[in-house]
Image 1 (cartoon, rainbow, N blue to C red):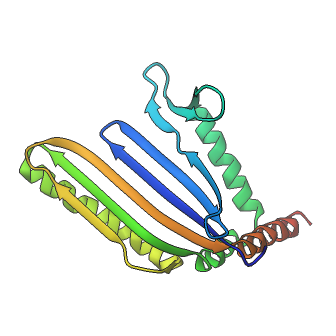
Image 2 (tube, rainbow, N blue to C red; image 1 turned 45 degrees about the horizontal axis):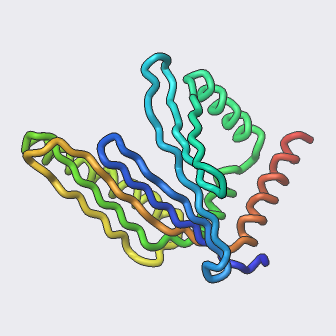
Length: 193
């Protein structure tokens, strides 16, 4: 069980205001598979909060759920995570060790941008290339790459359009994830004593 490889496939697509995303977890040559949808996000016009729209599919009828995340909830989440970081010694070193055991493959990131003005579109496309290069450079620094990324930016000089499609596969052995969890627990206990 510890030597089994876990594959996590992430697919995200956003076209203007429409958002669609899935995370698929696969194990044992893709025989065991679990897929979850990433909920869509909107800004609430009445209160300063983010609304998550989630659709669930099962044996019964489709269910649609809405969940609001206010600014206060978000601040509370950040404070709780900050307390966790303070109480865990060498958390970043533990995460770096785990990421060094992860493989990153099948990275595809395609963006279409149009701002109705050629100069603005060209500048925007350059900025997007900078963001993509920096993000992939950080991933490549901490994870093992199986193959190079396929990143593209398509300018639309006469249209108003923004869309992006991203997909990748992150693979690691279950034993490394368990060892990382145990390291975090062990380092938390040291802080309390």
